Length: 432
Image 1 (cartoon, one colour):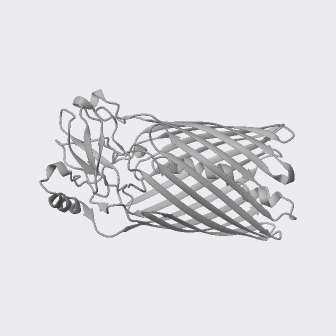
Image 2: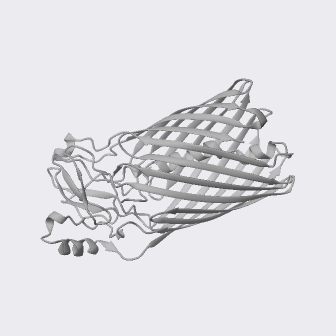
Image 3: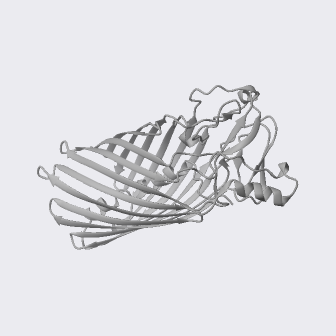
């Protein structure tokens, strides 16, 4: 069983949760105080073509205490199954891999991208946030987050302060978060860039087990993340506002994916052995975000741009827009477009050559390679009686990994080493 190898869907699930629940606080604040409870619930399906599938249930409950305080509690439960790309390259012949636990093997047919079909993950997450309005111009919030998976535990704290100026036309906000993650992979943490032990290379199970254990490190490991964000929101006119953010993220600890591999190939492109990946133990990331939102005659539109850069050289650009149109009465439709482009991390490589020294860090995980992706989505909503709302969302997501300048040798030229990833996202949500 393989856990904690979430391919691209972490972002997709996070975006889905934000799409459903992101404006809940503002919505609750604007409702009639006679109804001081607000509940949002949703179920979402995410399915990649011939790869990972996920089902996620989301629940959010808010309780207002007068006009000054608001408690927000969110629960997320998701289950992931399917096959995940291991990082090894396709070959002219079938390939056999040792499972992460060391118990058993899995095979990949000739000419196909190696996919680990042991992928399975179940996660439960609960978060609580308390918001307090101290004066007409000052607001604070404090939150706690817990997340548990079979091989991963995360504990997070967050807080922020918000101050309004210029007759409430300008708002400054400063927020921060600290997260401590504990990593306990199935089968133990692999020794970075050590060679996978294969049963066929040993005369007995005992010899194989000894070789497998030599590729493992004892105990668990941790990762710590400190996030800071400075934000300004400016009302531009009666219909338009502008928001700008600067974010800083400092991560240290275990960031290697314990289930990812690299193929070490000769000058004919034939794999000689499989190495476990290894990533740096620190990462400093900067992000810049701008968004403008406007109220139209019969709808709402927003446009945003995000630039992210870090000391892994994993730089990215994101363009996104939503347009919601009210058909009149109780119905609305919303169009969602998103474009993303990413530069490969400086230690990314699709394979390693036997003719070169093994680098200090290396990963063939396509998620940190060069890529573009886009999302096209449609949401339909209906306002029901007593302020309730029912909505449906359907989106198509496609990711296009690219070769960032690596020379393909021998048989590697015959195979698709950078296959597209296509996915469908469907969600039903109900607010009351």
